[in-house]
Each structure stands twice: as C-alpha cells, then as structure tokens.
Image 1 (cartoon, rainbow, N blue to C red):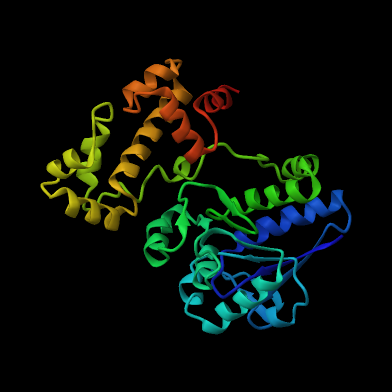
Image 2: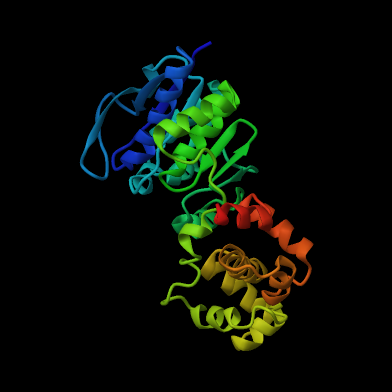
Length: 314
C-alpha cells in the first residue's frame, strides 16, 4: 500500500528541512517500489520561495487529495506563518484526516499553533527551545531530543534531524533493513547517538549576554559539589523562589535541569575522551550514583554511558 506524503511549505522555509526527508522517502521507495508517493503542498499552488531564495513548486493543500502523512517544514518563515490563520486552519483540518502528522525543526511551532501538540511530547530546534516552551506551555518540550514520537505525531530537531525522523518512519513502515540501506545511500548514520546538546553545547543557556552566565560558569567549576536551588539563589543574591522563576524565564530550563545538563555534558566529555571509570566520573561531575547518571543519559541522549564510550572508541 502506498503512503501519500505531503510536505508542507510556506514562504521562508528552510530548503533542507524539505529536501532531506523527501530524499530519504524517495530512496526508500527505490527499495520497496510504490511505498511512498511524495507531493509538495502549500496554502496556495505555485512556487514557494525558501529562505535561500531557491523555490519549490507546490500544489494547494486543500486540493492535494488524501494524505497519509502531513509533514511540515521549518525555517525562519515559521515566525510569520504561525500568524496565518488560514494556513493554521488548513493544517488542523488536514491533520485530522492523516494517519501521521510530523514536523521538521521549527515546523513544530505550526503544529503547536494548530493545537496538535497540546498535552504531547515534542521537540524543535535547540536554538528556539526557550521560545517554544514560553509560547506553548501545554506542550511537553523535550529540548534535547533529535526526534520525538508521541503516538501518531512526530516532531524533530533542527534541519538535518528531518532525515533522522524520516529514517525512523521508514524503519517502522518498511523494516530496519530498508532504513539502513536508505541511510547508507544518503551517507548518514541510521541512528545518531546523543541529543541536540552535542551540537548546541548548551549555548543558549550559557550565552555571554545572559543574566545568569556568570552563575552558570561558577556552577560549572563546582559540579562535584551540592548545587541545589538554595545555594544557587544565594550565589545570585536572590530569594530561592524569585531565582527559580527568573532563571527558568531567562534560560528556558529549571535550575535543577540546568545543573543536570551541565553535569551530563561534563560527564559525556570525560566518557568519550578518557579511560576513567564511569563510576568515578559519576562522582566527579556530581551525579554521585552511577545508576542515577545512567538514567539521565538514557533520558537525554537515548543511550547509556557505556554505549557512548564504545561508539566514541570505534
């Protein structure tokens, strides 16, 4: 049975958000003929210009016929597209008819604006995570994930993560063998280890102009010590309650989650570049218990520490 996929574009979309998944599904269909039928859709028919100036030809979404999956691209154009009530209405209506709904990068903003992510887990580009969490508090943002599946709704991180998303769907539809063959043809990993933090390096939280950058630097030098809210608030010369609220508003993360992320990044660097025992690393970076660190790695990176060490050594 052919799965009909509509890639939704809007002015200012990121061209790789569309081209990456399209290429993955197209290649998979070479190995399983007729598996996918691809179309490019937009609010109105015609050429849709990307942020690069290059354009793709689209058919009108309302006239595209039945779609098994609606896949929404991302890009800077989402900032304007979320204010297009007609487009959001079309997304909502067509999503109700589709077996799957998905987004690449900041395309998650359009799904969220349509109410399709309310109460669901989702991700988006790390650089816009704090903005997304602020604008859509009903969505359970998993900011470090490469892609997230919540039932029939899939979201992915920045740009090339759309290929990871497509490969995961191909594996579910056609089997792991075809997903691996597709990945080899694309010359990409079938499944990347780690999350977005390996690319963002927590840059948004630690940006120099940020209100709490000095505090985060101070904490980074003391990861092996207790770093509860009270101690952080004292260092910031604020009450714990006011500090927690201001910190979350500024960084997009709670103080506890921020410290955990700093500890995870420090632990990962040691795990991948040294032969130091994982149990000792857990103590050095402040997790204390290796099992606690392992659970945090699984939640954020999707793999335990020992798996990441083996991958780094290969």
